[in-house]
Image (cartoon, rainbow, N blue to C red; front, top):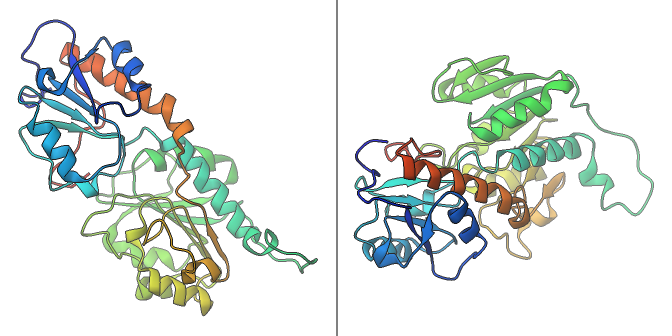
Length: 313
């Protein structure tokens, strides 16, 4: 750990769980790591435990002048980017929820390719259609924990997998790794395109009408990242016109998706309400991360899931 985030006190780490009274089960996680839960004014670290506005977080940090480290509970930190500063060490939940979200991707891809968008709501016997995931071509955007887990889960399916990331370093389980400037060429042969990347200014609106038109008319778009990666109006139009085979969305823009929104009635669309990771799934996973980071904070070891302020994730 560099000087930012380094402890200046002896004894057990003094950690505030904020906002006060939220997710009390995290008290056990802090204590399991050797920490003690204290009020904000006495804290050298903060475990932030609930989705609130950035100003609430900023006010809490300002009320804890001895705080060196702040743990955020989510993998995506885009609503809070303007609050993060270089005088604190910030960690987030990146990688914590990779396993359940990767499992959700697998479910959505199979459901889409196998026609569940049609067969699920049907009330009459229908004709046959569907594609195999076995041997399919996949393009996965993002190279974080979700992709690591997904590559392992996809192993038995014998897919040809291209991962798109900032640099083209090889990844175990991927047949090809390319950078974003080669994305357009990869879309033309993909049976499934998976969005599992952080939302930044560069990736906002990444899938607009132009990129959707580059996909195969049978291809499925699976999004478990953030709704803002897709231009929703363009997706609705592409689905209605059969430009792509379908979309399986665990995240949407806007979110929650309002009643009556056109996405609810577009063909070949599967929508789940941001449940790739649920609270019950998250409890043991987030608890384990916080316990380990509190332990590391106490001993001066590098923390897990540090935020890259320059990159915004």
